[in-house]
Length: 416
Image 1 (cartoon, rainbow, N blue to C red):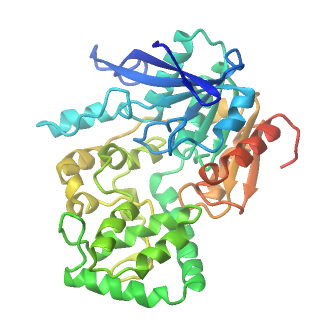
Image 2: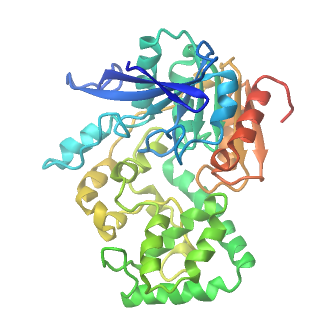
Image 3: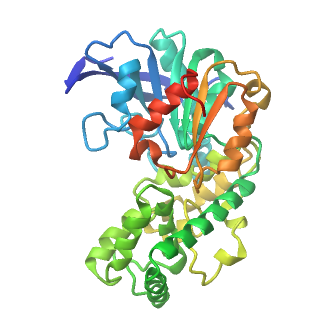
C-alpha cells in the first residue's frame, strides 16, 4: 500500500499485491511465477469506513477507469455515497504486470494466457480481499466484468455481500457459437434500424465498401482496409450514441486523412490493445473449445459482399488483416483450440441467497438479453431490470441513474 492522494472530494489509496500467475485449483503446472496486481481504493473524505464495492471492468484486457480524469466514471459519485470503491486493474492491464506480447514460443505464450480469464481475475480479487482483511464485499461488473462477477458468485459466494451486473450477465453452459449466433441477430436489427434513421448512409456505405475492394481505403499506416475488416465498424452500433458517431464517420471522404484517423477508433480489434483481441473469444467459453466460434456462426446474409455491419466478432483473418495483430496470429490460433474449464456452476448459482441485481439491455448486441434472463432465472435472488433506455454502455452513458436503480432493486426499494 502506498500513501493517500487527495482528489476533489475524495481520497485514493494505491494497493499492489503479488499473486501467483497460476492460482491453486486453476490448472497449476508446478510453476512458482508471480505477477503484481494493482488496485486503487477511492473513498469520500468522510467515507473511509464504508463497505467496499469492487469494480470489475469490461473487456477483457482493459484497466479500470481513473478517478478525476476524462475516464472518471459517471457512476462513481453515486457509489461513494454508500461504499468505498476498489478499482481493480485486471491482470495484464494498467499498473498490474503488463502482458508482454508474443515471445519466440507461441505455445508457451498461449499457455500463459490461459491464466488471464475470469477465473484468475476473481482469484486475484479474493487475494486482495484477504489482504485487506475484508470479510465480505460487493461487486459491480460491467460487460466482461459481469462475467467475472458471475464467476465470483460461482466460486466464492461467501465472500460477497451483493452483486450488480450492467450489460454483463453471461450465459451458463452455452457453446460459444450459440452465443455468437444471438449477437448476429441483434446486429442485423441494429443495422436495419440505423439505415431507417440515416437512409442516405446505405449508398455511402456501399460506395465505401467498393473503395475497400479497390484497395484505396487506408489506415493511418497506409495499409489497405478490406471490406470485411471495415464492416466491423458496426461495433459502435451497440453503444449509446454509436449510430450518430457512425453517421458522422460515413460523412467523411474515405480517401481523406480525417477518415483514416477516425476509422481506427471504430475498429474493435486494432492492435493497440492486443490482450483484448487475443483472449477475447475465450471469455465466452464456459467449458469446451471456441474454434473461432464467431466465424463458424456467421450467417449467410453477413457473408461475402454483404452490406451488413458486424460487431464485436473476432475472426481468424482479423489477425492477418490487422497489422498490429499479425504477431499474435499463432498464439490466437492455439487459444482457439484450447479446451477450457467451466467458469460457472449452475448448482451453486441456484442456491445463492445474497442480493443481486442486473441491468439487462433489450437490444444489447454484446451480451444477449434472452440468454442473460436465462441466467437470471438460475439465481433465486437476482432482480433483473430489462430496459430499452440504453444500449450496452448504459453504465457509461448514465451511470448514476443505472447504479442507483440497481442498488434500489437489490435492496427491495423498487420493483423491476
